[in-house]
Image (cartoon, rainbow, N blue to C red; front, side, top):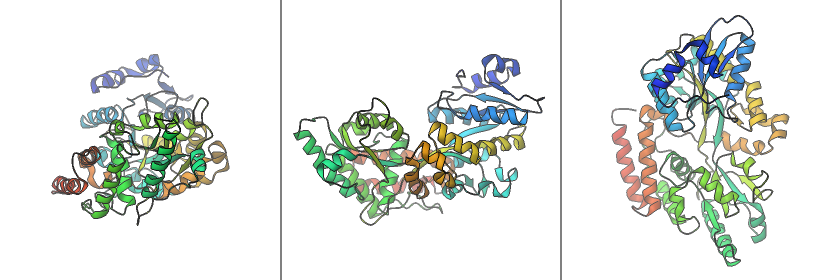
Length: 434
């Protein structure tokens, strides 16, 4: 399926307003076999082989006889969000269904329909409650969860066995084990070896990491469910202090500019003991050509001395634009895409994590990816970012959090000063209500 450039509102609008002929010529129109009752458009992913959205949209079109125009969107989430904001702010009816990131419902909710007006009351039964809560803004269900992610700890089982260690349960244990194994491996001639790699660049990925540190120390989630700022506490300070101690010790200085792929590269090349990353790493680490194939284990993230493991939730959802000319039909497509049979196929064919809890006990799903059995508890206990409660201020909340955290990791500011400044910034942002 050809990739359609949608980097600007004008390009997208020209494409969509070109009519069915233009869409058919570009190869992205999916036409049902029966007479067409209606035509809707869905903004999927990047259109590459990993994008399962067009496959399911085609199935729905064939089953219903409607026409679905599939629009490929930029891979980068910031570019995708910018495109959506342009479309929605202009009240364009060009796109009916949108695939949205887990932190966007509160940002885009004014432009999205309440799916509760179109779907049966039991439509959300069986989904992870935290994901439904995340997608419910002021009592309105603005999106249905499609697939989910959560932060995980990857480790070299062979090296833990070699040096006589169990998988760490606390961050302090991880620190001590990483320091010991790193020193021993370097003494043995592995000069590029590191104890722990994580995403430390000043971006949304650092928000995910730092939220896990703070929440797992019992320091809260920056902003609680009632909208109160909670970040200025001793547990949050302790969490950031510990993380800062890793830089240049068990984590390379380059961590300050690392995202998911840089850290996976270090770990998968055999140069790290521990890695924090998302579930997608598992299959890649076990693939042909991987230097660590057959040597890797996966576990829940460690916790602080008095906390419990907390993993930041990620994932994508489907929503319907308020400006759709066929909202009921669009909601039906959303229900189809996120229904159990389609989620099961997505899990088996693409290895993506379902948002319906019972699929983590499904024999066929587990046969295709045994690691999903271990993922269930992590996802069930996942912590959402404070995106729903802060609404359209979330981007600034996250920006403030990852910038202050990055300053702490860089040694530019101490953790206590950072959380005091962050507390003031967040309270100022929320002063008039989120």
